[in-house]
Amino acid sequence: MKAIVKSAVMLLFLSLCVTAPGGAAESGSGTRTAKKSSGGIQWVSYDESMERGKQEDKKIFLNFYADWCQYCKVMDQNTFKNKEVIAYLNENFIPVRVNTDKQQKLAARYSVQNLPVTWFISPDGENIGSQPGYIPPDMMIPLLKYIDTDRYQDMNFNTFLEKNK
Image 1 (spheres, helix red, strand yellow):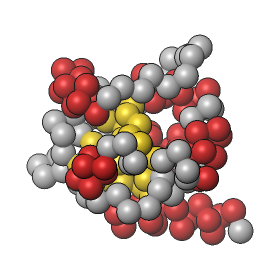
Image 2 (image 1 turned 120 degrees about the vertical axis):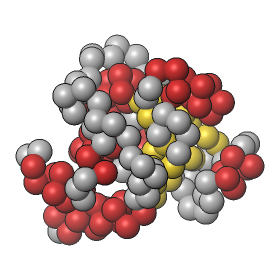
Image 3 (image 1 turned 90 degrees about the horizontal axis):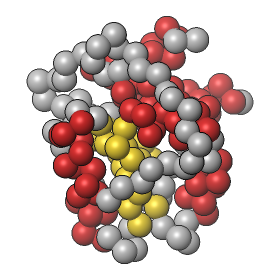
């Protein structure tokens, strides 16, 4: 059953993944490692993330949530409190959380209809793709690596998982 859920999540992400036109260059060796993080995720505002993404040549991790959303709370408690997720996000992405009730125009810009939903944005502001729903820590880490290493440009997520067991 777990394998079916895992496959469904992967296929859903792949069906929604939109690659940036022209593609991006491979970054270094293609792999980045996470440094240990003693605190939580270093969330920044959307505007700051767009500036820093360009300056630091980092992708943006954009998570939409609402205070009333139960799965958003579960993701906050499980995924966003996971030390490996915290370290990888802080090291390799510019992380942003957007409350859809407070930032409705931004949510509309990304066509947010259900929560939670996570978008991945290139350093130059182009949409890479989105993943709707709760993402558990054991799926978040490979998803972050898949996006961070630009493997979404040359292979599907299932192939990436198989090659990175």
